[in-house]
Image (tube, rainbow over all chains, first blue to last red):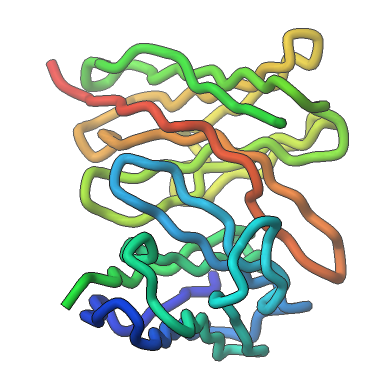
Length: 109
Length: 121
C-alpha cells in the first residue's frame, strides 16, 4: 500500500500570501498518478490538479503543482479568500489502487 | 454536464447492510470507473471501491469482505452494499467518476454531493 503523508497538517496564512503544501508517498508513484483536490465544508472534493502538474478545467492559474516519484507539491501563488479549505492528494498504484493523503487544512491567519 | 446523485437510507442499524445507489445523468456510463468514497465526520477520504463499465470491480482490501458494488447500465446507476455495519461505518458516502488514462494520469472529475449515513440503533 502506498501511504500519502501530507504536511503541514494545518497551514495558517493571510490572503495574498503564497501557500506551499506537500504530499510525500511511501513508495514511488508511477506515471505521475498523483492528483490534488480542494474540499470546502459541506461540499464534495473538487479536482484541482491531475498527472502531478496539470490543472483541471476552470482551475485558476494561481494553482500550480509539481513533483515526481515520492515528493509532490501544490502551490497557491496568491491566496484568495475562497482558497481557504482542506486539500487532499490522491494516488493510483498498488493495492489498494487508490489512496488519499490525510489532508492539509489551509486556514486564514 | 455530468451529474451524480446518491440516494439511500440515512440511518442503518448495527450489523445490518448499508445500501446506496448513485444515479448518473448528463453523460455516459461507458469508458469510466464508478467509485464509492467515504468520509467519517471530521476526517479524511477513504476509497471504498469501483466498478468499471465492463463490470469488473476492485475493492479496498480493508473493506473487501463486506463490500459489493454493482452496476445497472440501463438505469445509469451503480450501487454500494456494505454488510455488517458498525458505528465506525458512519460517514458521508460519495459516488464519483474516475478517469484512468493508463501510463498517463488518473483523477476523480465528477462527484456526487454526498450522503450522510449514520449507523445507530
